Image (cartoon, rainbow, N blue to C red; front, side):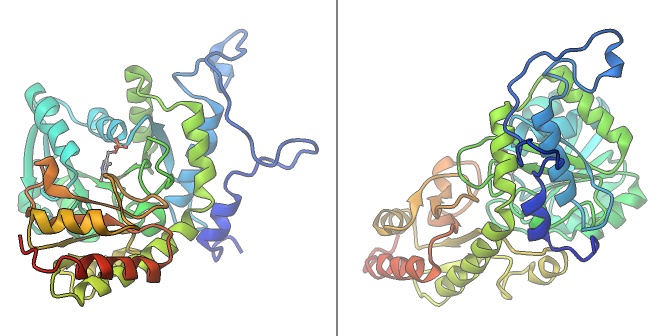
Length: 382
Ligand SMILES: *Cc1c(COP(=O)(O)O)cnc(C)c1O
């Protein structure tokens, strides 16, 4: 039974407490800094709230289940105060001065800035490579870790996780995948052979634009100990309320992801049909250069797509006239959001480049709204 059980069934039951008469079916958040711990502290699971606490434990168990296929041994997970603190822990627990990390060029700007501004000056050597280069043992020679993000951000680059894992095995490097865009329900890096699966849970995982959180999942218990120790010593911990909101949100993740992915594909197909729109990037579109690899490693293509209008003015006019698109950064929430990405100045994309996260609205309503907004562009060409 357990090996055939579907993700939605698992997700709906993740937060259940043991069936003891009179107990709450789902536990609430535990607000605690210190625990009863008489005598030898090793004998109690919890002692002080910076080390471990029960709401994290419930969330970490739940995420550990979702990071693997049904029936497999759950992954070891540690949750953090944000996605970037989880990223910092993955680097900080593994990389030491004199070691070498190779990162995918198309990954989240914050990850590259963390490496360049903090890790490189403390002696970690950093090389940036394309998704294809990452699959070559030559690129990875001498590396301690390779960092990929697939789909990448904001251009939805696809890296072949199995191919990078094979090259990394030859080079003796650990493979870490930033799985934020897909979530563990959309793609399971550990099942594809990666050593670390890292996620900003602030995006589709929690999915309601109300929580900042992140996690690292691993199979190796020694690596888990290092991640745990890093968190304890640096104190970048999640609040119990955030952890509980995340746990509560996981039950609806399969539903949300299914709906958002189906609508994102419809929106991408619609945008492709319009003359005003160039370069529609969505891994679910057969025209996406990474589609075949994405289809082989992803379980669903996710809520994020991007496309390019003629220029800054056209993009701004489109975003302000579409009534069902909320102008905001980030992605993966229940509400459709989009932004002109070049306004931040760090992604190197065209002035008319828009990243969109498709939410839970009716896809037909979204498309009708975008149709009106595109029609209204009229003569705006730049
Ligand atoms: C948002 C994001 C992060 C950082 O996560 P925060 O929760 O904002 O700290 C890391 N990687 C990717 C791919 C992201 O989209």
